Amino acid sequence: MDPSEKSGKIDIPRKAIYRLSIYHRCLQKLHDNAVETVSSTTLARAAGVKSSQLRKDLAYFGQFGTRGLGYPVDLLSTIIREALGRERLQPVILVGAGNLGSALLHYHGFEKEGFEVIAAFDANPDAARARGVTLPVHPVDEIDSFISTHSVKLAILCVPVESAQAVVNRLVAAGIQGILNFSPIVLEVPADVTVNNVDLALELEHLSYFIR
Amino acid sequence: MDPSEKSGKIDIPRKAIYRLSIYHRCLQKLHDNAVETVSSTTLARAAGVKSSQLRKDLAYFGQFGTRGLGYPVDLLSTIIREALGRERLQPVILVGAGNLGSALLHYHGFEKEGFEVIAAFDANPDAARARGVTLPVHPVDEIDSFISTHSVKLAILCVPVESAQAVVNRLVAAGIQGILNFSPIVLEVPADVTVNNVDLALELEHLSYFIR
DNA sequence: AAGTGTGAAAAGTTTCACAGCG
DNA sequence: CGCTGTGAAACTTTTCACACTT
Image (cartoon, rainbow over all chains, first blue to last red; front, side, top):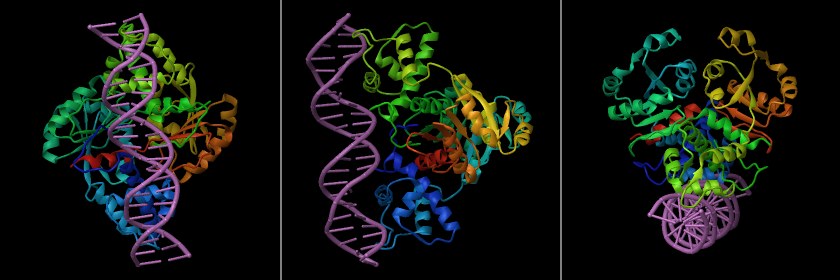
């Protein structure tokens, strides 16, 4: 993972944005426990970072802590949600409902975090349906019209490596702006499209370096 | 993802290690096409990095390029494989064969890259088998003995968040040294254990920051 | 001429440490 | 007093640019 330089927003370190999501989760848990205020030290510990880093990260968006007291949980939660562009539900499509793709559809981790996967696309929709996918599965050539009709901006990509780049080209042409890519391949996209690579084999390989 | 400082090996940037895996893949492709030599520029382009970075990364391990010519594909491939500790097949276990876990077992991305998932563990092995898992599924309390008997060092963790830390404690006590964690939680492990987090919802959230 | 290897500069990120506010 | 907000320092990683080798 390492999306190259994109803006629209300014100046906030890439890594800080990842951490924002983590903070947000911790805040939700605090909220569920009816905690109203939290100090940078406490929240940082929960998130697994240093308190100074947490404070720096938050400072990118303004000042909403109270000295001597800490941060108001709910306000902070809202601020982060807005900063991440998650105020409203983002529709997402999934392309490639093969083994991994259909698996991800069964796993409801995305829904749990508030993303709505509204449709799946596959070269062979019947095969995908046979795999037990309950979501509507469309043939790939309907992608373009679907994207514009539903103004979808995010796509999860699980197609085979061979077809990945071709599918991405279509997605981009149709207006997709963010791609969560599971294919082990370096995708070419214009500068205004962000790709996040999740490369499972690569993560395992990385681990294998650290075991002695 | 951001495993905290661990050594055993020295001085090589964490990110460089990820890139090594990518280079290795590109080299395999070159090898398959009977290419014998490759320049840093060409290989870097295939891997999606700058040529200077590629050269720096390789320089951590020694000098094996020929000026004016480039790098010998096969030698470089071997060097990287050794550097990553991938000379021999690493056995891996998967813990938590629920939705995502059993999905990963059907997806054979790990095998394709040369990791052997030798067993699965689940609180409810029958349910996992009902999910179509063909690999042997053991009850969780057999983990410890299995790990020592088979001297497994890598584990893929797909258990629910609630039980993740408890399971990790067991894995660590049993001698696991690397964990590929899919639970959205910050795991506590001793310094000699490496955790790689793959947090799917977090990756989507990160994307949503970049779409305008 | 082509392309590596590498110091040194630049850029990016994290941590420190402390002034200042409630 | 406790804890935030933040400049400055420390550290890490990337990029540049060029001497040097085949």
